[in-house]
Length: 202
Image (cartoon, rainbow, N blue to C red; front, side, top):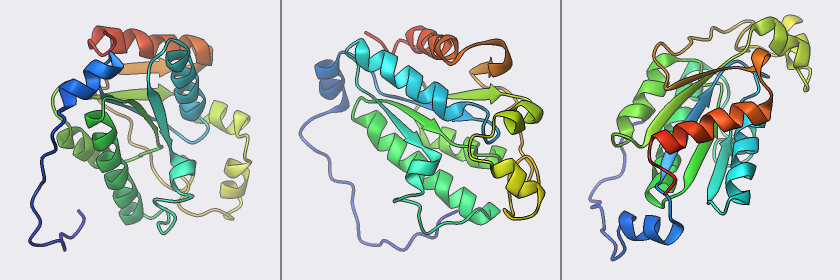
């Protein structure tokens, strides 16, 4: 849990409400949280879904794990404490994006249940959906476009989820996608169907 150091601060309400912003976009804000092992396909699926939605005239954006660590979380490592802070930051950013009416995808390994649940609790009912990208570690290692598993196996990369660090799979996600049984486009289609079911696409 992040230490609260900000004092004497009060939330300042603006003149434009969320409903107005969502009306302009003709959609409703939501955070779709993709979790799974490294190289499970999270980012590929998230960016595919984003592309499909934008082509349909929707405003969507991907908060990707690696990309976020180039800026917002570049001062964090991969210890359990740093992972928790990384996920906390993304949860807060995703909450703001959702309030702006954006269909927001987050693509993070996020291996610990308590960290993911903390983000869920941060969001209002109906504003969050967890998607488990269920890919066997053997397939992840076979794909491994960055060669990270090989480096982790030799000890070159410590704290690597799926090798030296654990991954705790979601117990009750809103959607499970088995990438061994579908293409990224088909996976993205499942997510868009979920968004429609949630009433996020007007």
